[in-house]
Image (cartoon, rainbow over all chains, first blue to last red; front, side):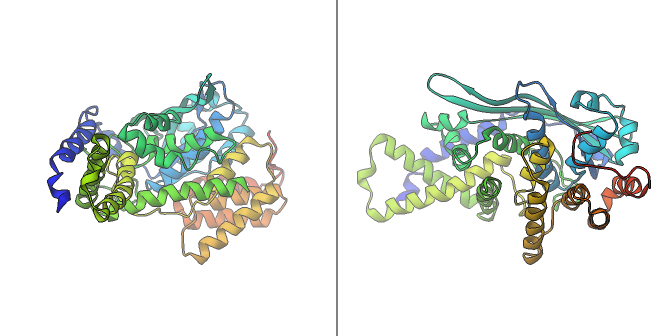
Length: 224
Length: 185
């Protein structure tokens, strides 16, 4: 077969691609996470550092899916929002400052997810626009206050522009992104969805561990 | 219906992702190789050496490899089963409810009930919080009994929610303080 003759070149390319994965940061220390075994998660209203007022609801609303698909019960964010408001907690900053035993008492969750939105929205330049969502998160055990996990993620429309420059990775990401762009008036909300999956989805290298409702629950964390 | 549109689009990309693991790591790697190989040839202008069949095979391989590649990107080799829940436009509905403006609770109740019916027909599970959210909307529309039912149903479907649901149910049944509304406090 003609294909076989061509193998050496692709092998090198694939290895270099894998090399990209291999040079990732050192493996996360999951000992606290594995000991805590959280099942119920309270996603706190995300603190917004961007100028876009839709950042907090956008990132918040998109956080449930990856965590639920990762095997956790996620408390309904709209009711959580209502509960905070009714108790005079009007901003995400205020909510995130509430002492953890109080949260445990109110919501009965095992752990809380504290998200910060660092960038959110579209910036317009002369020739191009960039829709970008940057988030980071910490998961705290609400029974002990221990830090169980932290991580960060980015999603950007510039990933698609990389593809036009010929990068293989850009090509692959754009296949996902392309289908989203152009259909939504609220583009950042879709990128919030991508960013939240990259931030909170499982299994991912150094990501959140699969929860009790996942078929992958209890398996050793991904090491590559 | 923008919400539904956006949702069906995002589920298309999910299907790609779910499909990829079925291919098996080896197969998708080799296909990825074929794909890259195809690109390299294109770049070096050696395409002419191929007959038609090989070319179409390569194009096909490239398409399949793209699926595998996406899986690599999404999870850096995410090997997982299919989704646990049927999401439809639920995240979008929550987003709109969180913003409290420009959405109609009645329209949302209609959408979510259609969603629930679809899930029932497909034997798919409803996501965590779905029943609770719908219960909140029903309460906003004055249907206290329906709200109570739905919050109980959330508890049954997800016992993990019991503490919070009990908290809400207690408030619902406290005679004086049942004036919970949709509007910001």
